[in-house]
Image (tube, rainbow, N blue to C red; front, side, top):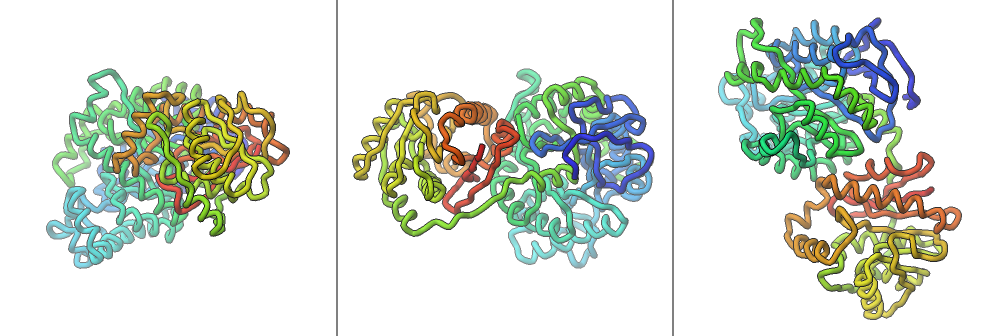
Length: 569
């Protein structure tokens, strides 16, 4: 794929569903309310700040089919997903998709509504009566725990995927009705099947918390089941991301459409994108125009009310509003589909390595003992693993700088390994703690009180930095609060699950400053090694110079979805 921006015309020929969809870049593309087939769209992918506007339930009812068609003609819908067991499936593939050239297409896997696609006798554990799938999310949790249940789930998933493929369609991603594919056992199956059938991506529902539209709208997720669903799906995302990575299946960084699923207005979409300032985001909508007289039968009675609800009109209106288009242009978001996004991700993916850790290095980092007062940020359980990565990376380094040293654990490990190390921290209390811990471990090193590199003299071959998990510089009260809260097991295990917007932006600001100051403190060929959450890698890359090279280091001791991020300027 050419990553340079080029202009193409989309209305003169029909790409296969799932083919490349034009993007909205810096140049003017289709404005909402204009005919997409008569305008030019701008293609440009950088894999860093991408948004996928996705509509679920194509093929479920005629009302959804017409909603997808209308949303596409609005100019900003970039992707949809088809229900293989939908009432209007044939209408979708013969009437809607030909009318929406270039619209990305996924498969909306359904295990809890309408009829099964596989032979009923082969998926009996999923059925309520006859061929009807048992409704609900929680019954599938029980079925997915059973080996036979997982076999039957796989049979139904295969049948739905193969029906779509047999009709000549080229899906670019998989997801699940009511997000049932996020149940970890089902998610692993979904990723494995995506890999087997050559489908590039799977929806990962990881939504950052955000508020929108005043107190009344902000409290809306608390007044229904959306808040509980938000917490559950984000918890599942923690393990599911690792499963997708193991299968080498792409997943967007963030998702919008759980908390405000019935209220996806312009404000909701805009504020959701602001909550995820970088990386890739899927925005989920359910556009429908109903009731449609062709819908003679509904899988569940509530669907008739659903397609007539005001929320469906809100979503269509949002996609037509020039303000949304202008927001995307102003904030440098580029609209894409899963196929183009996944291709760009593959090309821009940082190389990854799992360095071999010598036993001597493991021994040093295991035996170092550190402690500190509650007003100094404590060393977390993966600090020793990160110290091992620093030692391996510093094997050929002459001078090493540990900034934000805290308790001094990294600097102490480096000193015990015989490295020439200097420590720095903005906190005088932290430096006193680091010196005391160094004395207990029989080593010493230079210490400088400095805001990043501002007061550190000299040049170094390696700069190691573990940014504080905070939204502003550490203070007495914030450090005490962090050290107390991190004693709660669920907080300690889940701190890397979803990076709060304020923490993410603070980290971006720190790294942006560090990169500006680093050239005056690095020897030729010198590197920076960051301790980073995987969910923030894209955001941190977005503030690096275009010429900077990035490599990710993995270590089994790094927990909470963290990696070592090597930056070469």
